[in-house]
Structures are given as structure tokens and as C-alpha cells.
Picture 1 (cartoon, rainbow, N blue to C red):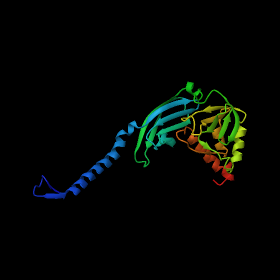
Picture 2: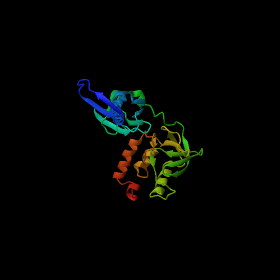
Picture 3: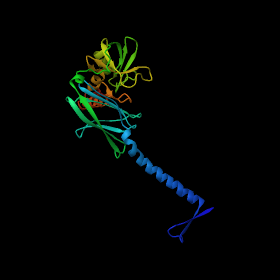
Length: 269
């Protein structure tokens, strides 16, 4: 089967195509339209892709939690300087915890970029810092104290209730595998919390697949997760969506590695 196409501007020119060729042209045109729309559509809708879920000034910290497209680079910008940078997880969630600026209203910009860094969108937000919220304490940290019955290893403890708590955002050498620095990591954790009262802070998830509580653990207002990474007895490890303090852990890990603390000098990492 053949189809004859007559060009209207010049009826004397006729183009004869068979059916397969005609189908190929139509299919090719559809692919071109789809490709163009795939490029245009994110740019038309990207302004609505970023949602700020939580923005709070607590004591000396500003907490910003939001949602955007999955696996996007997200930057927090203040006065044209990048204050912090992270990546949204597979669900699009991201979080920043930064030092609180001085009292007053401050204009920040949240910039999201795709993997190519060619498509970036900026969203303005304002943060109001008052004397009242600077004097507040972090509401996500429990007021209740929990007694630590025993330490399992460098990143897991057992409470007097029998519940196990897995520290969020870090990873310590496995005792069961007799991994390098596993005993030292456990001993440091014991020194910090065993037989003592601690406070717990939840991020996004409540428990892991093993039924352990996922928490940031505090002793005397110091975060144990941080102290372990800082002293080189644990490493920073991201477990989305619980990434609230991940940038801080990475900075502490970098310092520990630079100074060859703990496992960074003793183990082949």
C-alpha cells in the first residue's frame, strides 16, 4: 500500500510513501514531541516541586525540613553564599540543621538542581530569629530520660525496658565479625553511656527492620552519635530518610580522618 502526498505550495511536486515509511515518520514525530515535552515539563512545574515542611529556630540551631524531587542536589544559600548542601533521598525528603543567625528576619534561598546541574530552581524563604526561640530547647529531644542497661557495640545499646536503640547516621565496626577497632568502639560507647541516663531524639523513622529504635542519643546535652564519629571509633553513614544531622557527621568524620583519630590510623579504611 502506497500513499501519495501532494505539497500544497507546489502541487507539481508529489511524494509517494509506502505504509511502513509513513508509520515510521509518524512514530518519529511522536518521539520528538515526547522528548521536547520531557525537557520542558520539569521547567514549567519545578516552582511547585519544592515544599518546606518544617522551619524552626531552636536555641542556637535552625532546622529546615522539606521535600522536592528524588535525588536532587539541594543548597541552602544566604547572602549569595552556600551555607550547606545535601541531596534529597529517594522519596524527595531533605533536611538542614545550621547555626542560628543573629536576631531579626533573614532571607534565605533554597536551590534545587537535577543530576546534570543544568536545571536549577531557587525558592526564597524567610527565617525569623527572636530572643524567645533562641532560648528554646530542641522539642524533638525527649524530656524523659532512659537508663542504658548495657552496650551491645559501638552503635547499639539496650535500655532498661529491654528495647534496643540503634544510633542514627553512624556505623561502628561489627563485634560479631571481629572487625578492626570493634572492641575499642564498644568500650568507648560503654564509657559514654552504660549505666547512665540518656535522652533520645527521633528523626523520621521510628524503628529499623530488626525492630530497633532509631535515635540520636544524648548524654549531658552532648550527642553520643557525634562524639563517636569525632573520636574516630565510628564512621558517618547515611540511612535515608533519617539524615537530619548527616552533614555534621560527615564534617566530624573528615576531621577525624585528617587527624588520624581512632580507626583512621589503626585500620585499613
